[in-house]
Image (cartoon, rainbow, N blue to C red; front, side):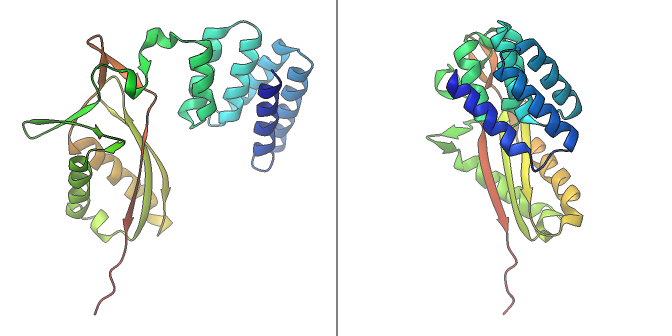
Length: 230
């Protein structure tokens, strides 16, 4: 348990500079309650944090850790999953260790599924992932669509995205960074999401003939640079 306490302390340290005074105090109180083994109080405090700041992954992680100590494993793993969705990789490990049949086993690793995620383009079906990366065919289609876009063809900057195909055959996308003219950022974001959604037909991974979600996500960075005139 010493290792987990260390994680909780680091989580607190990371948020001190960025959260409000009230949230800071709640983290201090939650840390104190947890260290004193008052896990019910810690649960109550971290619940307040997640209600006030649902985008705070540390709040979700610590709430899950508190519930785990109370023997509420399934509920704890739901909280860890919220932290995972906010890009906390440690949360995935906690779910796999404490809830091996989480959500009836409908979230799996890419290497464990019977059918890997695919996409349909034209009348052909392609694997989304080839080897350790995305299918070059998919990347080529995406680059071509960017060139066709009146909005993206004028954009000068870089974009970083993280995405995966969920069990509903839909794309889950998180845009991490849009550089360049920030006044245009929201327009660029909407255009990217539209392009990704309409590019191909997505087909989720399957196991036992049932669609499943994946732990795996894929990261892409695109650079749209201005070419100097001659």
